[in-house]
Image (cartoon, rainbow, N blue to C red; front, side, top):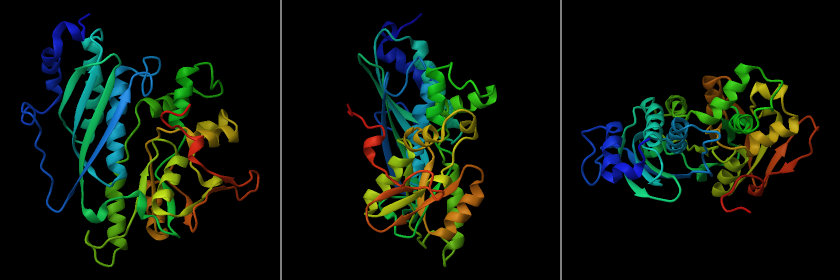
Length: 341
């Protein structure tokens, strides 16, 4: 099996260039053209073997898909449509060339769905396989989604179910679990972890709704939308938005969208833990006025829901209107954080 050290940097780059548009790559930098009256949006994500992906749970193709999806999700969370990505690779010399090609195949499979090219990158030697992606997107200035734009009275919308990715990971790590699930349910949960879908589809729907809500039917009329993606968990997203906006929130426990498979597998407490803190669902969490929020949920259909509201103060409260669970104050300390012991 051919290894990276056998063909060197230039040999590997020659193989990877087939995944890039020939008219863009080949120089010291890529040149991307944004549309008139659009702002450029840039995001970078770093993934490390053993932290973000593992041969135990993720094929090279799935690792590539997940890496691309994570960056496209960050663009979607800003309201931006993608223009292209660059890929930085840190690779051990003993890694097989086939593994790297399969990684790029997975990235390409995800990116092609959104007409997004790989426009460049870099390759270096590293003791640990590391993947650093920078994604570029564009958005009209009045349609930028920011964490700091939530206001008291806004509805909190989720674009889909939460907890599925973490459940899929549990099934991969512990195949003996989930005995009450059928094959289709297991497959769906595992796919949610290995092949998450960035919610770029939400943007065109949101734009139509906001245009209808605006007194002037064009992008110059601004209805602020706050939001981010839920890559680090639903609770994390709501807390981060509230902190940036200097507001509080109430989440309604019974409104949080869960995979139906959880009813046959997890206790209510476990299901809630997966949804709030599991992470890597890559749904959008958006805060906007009640009327467009309701219209967005209706357009998106199953899985989308209004899960709470923005309140004065700074407390983020989880509330159960059936009183089976006591009110709970949510905090970042319960979710995943890098460098947390």
